[in-house]
Length: 305
Image (cartoon, rainbow, N blue to C red):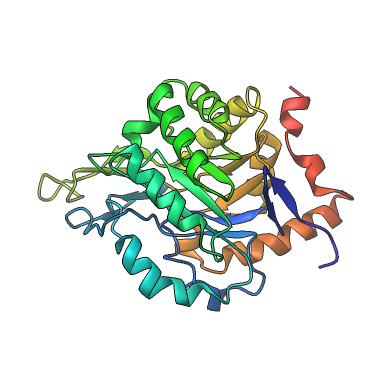
């Protein structure tokens, strides 16, 4: 491809606006064999300071237009990540974004400080939106004051760009977006999953071991587009849009809503080549529609409303 697809998200510069969403491709190295074109960034599986075993099984349930998950932030913890996972990430030629969660604001700060010192890590995504854990996560993401405090602390501890990942499980996501912008976030990623539930009618029991989980996939895309559109009207920092993106038409719609980049989640789990294909498809879309600079698409619906 000869077209320049690069994008600047605050202090973070990506070679293209396609990312993978955290938790949908492990730590990234598992996905590399399926990719001809590397996405602009791979967002790593969520990390906590200590190892987490995750929620009881079953943790995944299919729905007619999406997936319910209640993984519960299962991960090896910071120390094992450095020892076992980090060496496998050294030769991946794209930006790696660490996704962090904590029980306390101080834990977020420790993770940000240590991870941002690693040369492999290009940015920190602050998860204040996970619906599947009892402590941390969404507890910080549903209150503008708490969201400000945790993101501000991460910004102070991090030496790399900071992205705040927001939850749709709030009354008005714009209040949270404005709070993390004031806290110094370089960008916002949105949306995380919507809280949902499925019941096995043969047994009469909830399908998930954790009873409720996060709904992702095509079912939530119109909600994500709406929230990106609303948030882009009030913040000046860039937005990474996500939620049910499966093809180039979905990518373009999210960009027109005001996102400067997009992340692929459930779509990657269905087709691991999707992030790579969407990079090529964005280039082809611009050719077919005589678009010289793809960034002209960003916020088009805002300008034409």
